[in-house]
Length: 478
Image 1: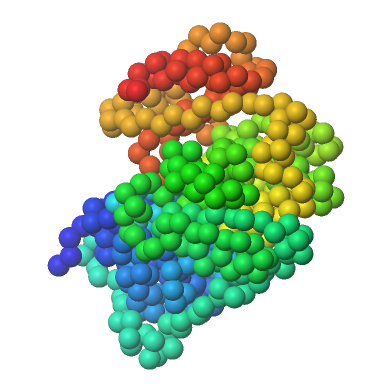
Image 2: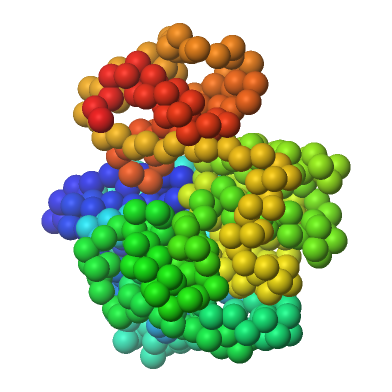
């Protein structure tokens, strides 16, 4: 008899859990059984599913566990035959026209985590109604029931699992959308840091096709990610910064563990915050490429995008955190670009999810077409639209404190006494307070056991003061 499986819950970026605790073979199988039965009930099971995986510990094995369950439930599987970037998996779901796909990944989470992202028709992140239905179906599974499986070798022999390698198609799709000629003429020197993840092959191929000089660090397979968080931010990219400066590179490009987010080091060795990258790319698409359309950002992303949109007669839409909300709003409004302050973005005409590889290629194109260093482009945009400073703080909490915060902030809706007039307050996703020239938000993370405080103001001192005020009000430890 099997033991009771621990709870599987989806957050804003799929299901993520500690390996050996909640991320177990049994829970992966139960999730897949629930999704397979959902697909069969919807009449799309025979269309099959695409499964891919990253370089994390157990990812390749878990993809096999998943394939065995789908085969057992009569759902054909197209299994990507090597570790793959999450955006490539989403692209494959879209191009094959299947209704569902999944990636075994925990994205930028620490190495002790793994998880599953589910995708829907068109390669979009699964919406909340879908993930809630999967959770409901997992709950209906008898705790003593072993999911139906067909051993992997037998599934291959019976044609229920088929290996595929869509790398060429994916890379060609990106190459066809960027100005290879302009990049080639610019003779750029690019440093790559895949952070021991899965972007190396795709990024190297694209940039070498464009005749860039390419150097790569941290490219080996290391399930511990070199002992650091596989998230490209100012604290994790010191080695890339040093390489750029020592070797006179035009820029450094980093991607997170599954390559759906980017981090950029400019020619001066400065980390360019994803907020500024979004501003750069939106301005580039409008000004240099002559494209039109609104922009979509989440509640924790810079309001400078609103200024850029307004200057071109466009609109900026704000949505909750979670790229599925960005994708949905982009489809609804035919938006040109959508993104978030954590480094994920996408552009109209590509996939509906975030893609760090495509974003990196587009930034290299921008550098080539503009004919000036990234630092100069950034300075120019500060002159045009002003500079805002964002403070981001994350805090752990006990279950009791979480309950207290939810009661205080979201039920009683109590707020500290702010030194600035409050324009409005939104509780659409946590709590967000709007001031005339900035904003402050506090929300529980959907991917990690943390509460996050964001504040964007015209000066760093103002942002830090307001973030500290909220921290103290919520009784969070430093």
